[in-house]
Image 1 (cartoon, one colour):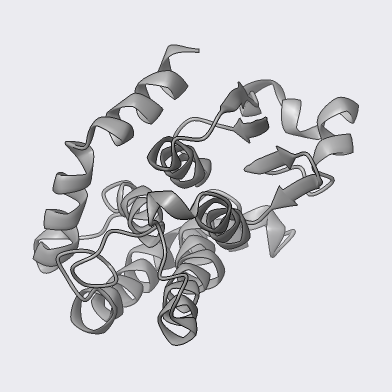
Image 2: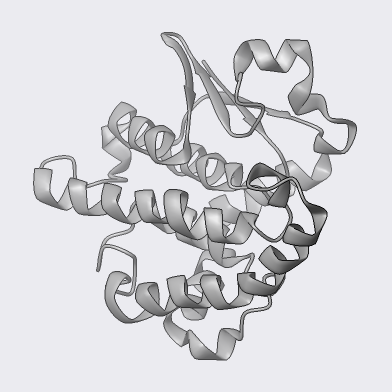
Length: 207
């Protein structure tokens, strides 16, 4: 049995969708950021980073979306959510997911998490002003070079697809002109219509 700790509209959506795609038996537990539940003693025992997602497994707790997505794909090989028999293709998928985690998500976080990088509140406003530019630059690379199409890895759906979908949902609030990214938006639109995506999002919004 797996337990996913999530927050609605956060990057944890990617792992939530992947668990549905895998047909995994799991429980989803909401972490209420509005009441700072992520900083509570109980949650810090699970994830001392005070963030989501966290995935409790029989062997321990996993954090960081790329690691969790790889774990889900490898734990449920029958779902064919990653090129498990091709080390180079698997590494390519991991490279894409790592870029979303280490670069795209960080660029997005400068809009509302300026205190992670500075103490002067005047700096926060400067960070927010920069977000449309930095996130746009990230998606220019994804649109032109990284998204093979129709799925991230080409013709085959993988765990990279729910991750791209999740991050692409933040484009408008980051002030990005989405008309510049027709391939990314087409991917996002197709993902939104998938039953497992609808189920995961509905489950998060219902609690």
